[in-house]
Length: 153
Picture 1 (spheres, rainbow, N blue to C red):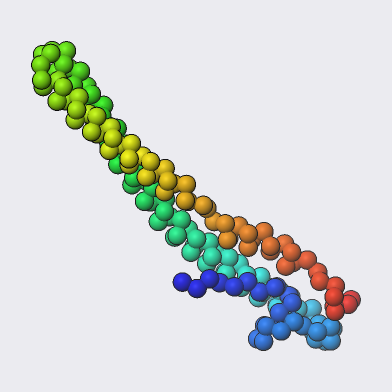
Picture 2 (cartoon, one colour; picture 1 turned 60 degrees about the horizontal axis):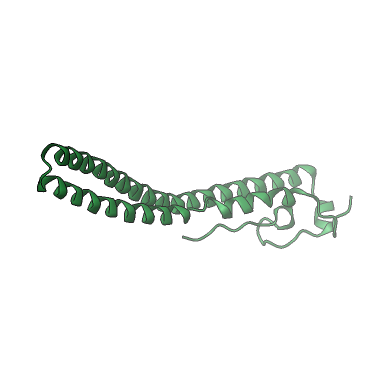
């Protein structure tokens, strides 16, 4: 997927991408200048929305995988509680081999839950948010500031 690029606002021409000269700006009407500003801002906002959508899709996949692994760890934890309860029950009621078998199964489920939890934690740490969109949006106010080099009033 191609990343949208961000122009430099008023500094680029609508068709060529070249900076406007002082003569072009002086020769333009206020209406034309406002149309260019509005068009540039509209393009910039569309590009920012597209960038945010792309980042959300990427980060959503990572978050979904981490959520699935946390779900597996939760199920493993449930199984630990279930088999520990059964082992305690069987061990206290029978004091026979059946209780020890339940305890062994519970230990196996504890190991599975620990592995799933560590994998989920590692995947969750890779979810980083919308860094590119955040950085790009923070530069917008700079694009709206006047650039006095070459443009006079």
